[in-house]
Length: 490
Image 1 (tube, rainbow, N blue to C red):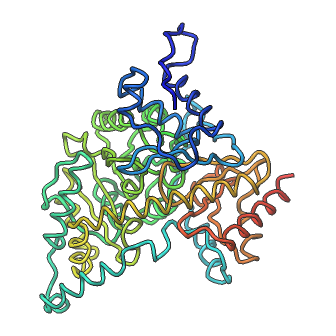
Image 2 (cartoon, helix red, strand yellow):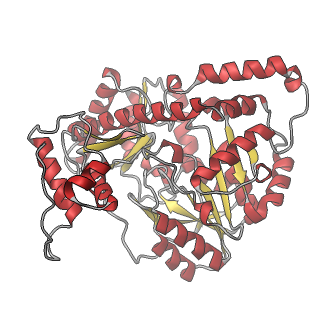
Image 3 (cartoon, rainbow, N blue to C red):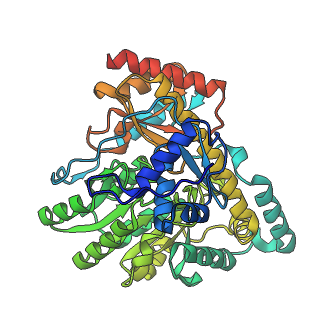
């Protein structure tokens, strides 16, 4: 490409420089000068070519990425991509300044029970309802080999008592990897749990009593709503942005309106179901707000390693200086769904959480911890994550292109920067419960939006999994789903 000087300084009403340069490169892509799949000029080259700062070069590439004309590949730079066949209107932000609905004891159990009962009774051919990847995308053989070696060298593992907190080497590996997310943890501050769901149970039991109020994102993972209901806690749903997650402004309003909020639970990275990512400034502001109000902040960081970014995002706990943040995480989505390995670092509640864990479920078995710890301590783990993110990115893109092509006008979705699913808004308030019933009769299982809130505000949404390879069966199922939505939304 011929050298293109940076445009002259424009008046304040003109688009910013990075946006003008992004428009220039988009034109080059549309003209075929930069071909689909070709590597974009490096950040260093862009800086020299246009005499711009690193920040401007990054904004240029990220703008092309967010507009669908480029994709970031881990350790490789930015590459030209094929934009979606049909551009879809992005989801709207939640209304600002609106107080939340009254806190209430969650009534989600009946909905989830009905969903599970119908799912079990049906012959499911295509499952869009789960939030995990296909089995072959996980390193099963490497994990099996590691556990076989462990049993060969330590045959007493199956007959001896496991350590109270978990395998020391596994906890050491978790503490070391936490450093990349900005956390400074000792292995003694890590307690192994049965998945993230037990970690959340322990965190909530440590900071609240039955009848207390817990602030959660809206929409949120229905498993969290089930936990709240089982513990007799009230859920106060705080609006969440499809882009930036929990609205800190709405939480501040809620704190003025409600006394006795005991904790806030958030998923900062690839929020389930929205796929949003909380900016660092919002994370720090949230930490300081909860500290000042004496409210526990519980972080569910299950999905961060599925983000399509070059380096790990900062955990909310990395801003914690008082032990007020409880960090919960899991390997369920990223390494091995069958292992149910999670952990918790509970700050000033650590001793109480350890006591509750001992009273509730005692020690976890250690064979899977040893296998996972060995693999995570090797270079194979990061290679696995890169392969998994690449596969999921392709599957998400093909899924969203199909939704754009097959679903009726007015459909919206949020295209996340990583993860296992997309959140789809159906047009004309089309009821997801009816879509669920219609689809299940044809062997297609979806997660209706009504599962993700105790209110009816999410009934016209679907969560669609992208964890399985995209093939003709998946394509046909999405096309049929689009036809069902069109028949209901006319």
